[in-house]
Picture 1 (cartoon, rainbow over the protein chains, first blue to last red):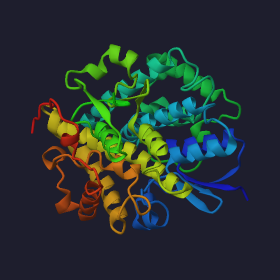
Picture 2: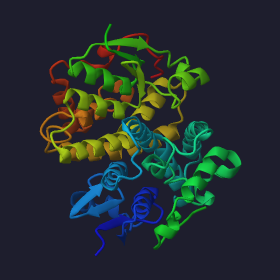
Picture 3: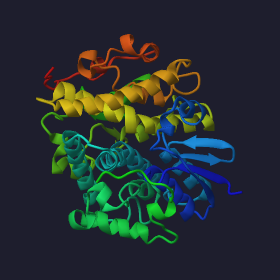
Picture 4: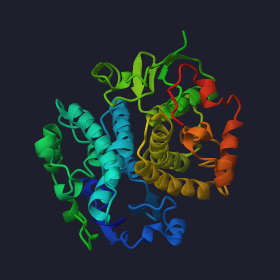
Length: 214
Length: 214
């Protein structure tokens, strides 16, 4: 039996971050498809028994049920001595970008994409508000990557694995064509996709999909 | 000269988190008021010289300019051996709530409050969207605090200091009267406010204020 079980749904970029991290660290894991679209993670039962935050993914790790993607990435990086940064200064930078990602990049992209592609009749005003903020955040990312290969230091870290989490889905879902609008981001995404063992989101996380409204 | 300099503006809950942490750790710091309302933190000069993320606060710490509130809280907790949690399990919980706070609670409350109170004609649809999500997050917080004194373990940690950051401003700004709607949250806020040395946001961070539109 694989040592890890990942409760996920295919459209979840946070699930993808963990699946990709485990894959790139050469770990096997069992996938447990979860009926997010059917509202399972929002039931009182799920909140009480699995995750009070009502979120996916959940990683079962040696009998423990872990939640919150970024702390899990930090734990795995420490365990495998991979993707954690090479010294204290890099580790601080990794942490900074992980928080920025959760607050800003993933925070807004996950919500924007979900509203845009997987919600029947999203509010155009809300979409415009989210997109305007995302444009700002993607501008910061583009500037940072203009003269860098990866987010921190000279090699990939969990900052990269976290920040690409919602950017590698099809542009039909995100509404962003980075190759056209954000060349440095686009090249960086290709660099991450060239890491040995890399796999695309819907390839790594198969199973029944949410209905798309776009 | 105090060892720390904090670049802040009075309405910034993230600045308050750092000012409160330093205060509760018995540290002196110099306050540097920053013209956030005038757009200083969004200029190319600020982004290049101070913080590429274009954000406040910035903490000068022995010649280093540190940004991103949560990683700074983690560093200070380690340095002073205070508010960091008592063992590995607690430290993981602290990290989980710090990320949840940045993504969800602070993430939405900071934006909602800014749009609601400090923006000239905010979009009612956008306000309604943000408030609906905030209601969900505050419900999670209320449930967590129903049978607990503090977020993690039996004493205050930086998870508390982070999560109260935007909740202790006047209800005229946030639009939430927790004593009425979230009794467990309200009692927890009072518990944090009873920590020795505690001071309220606008008391700890004086100076010229933003124009309020509400």
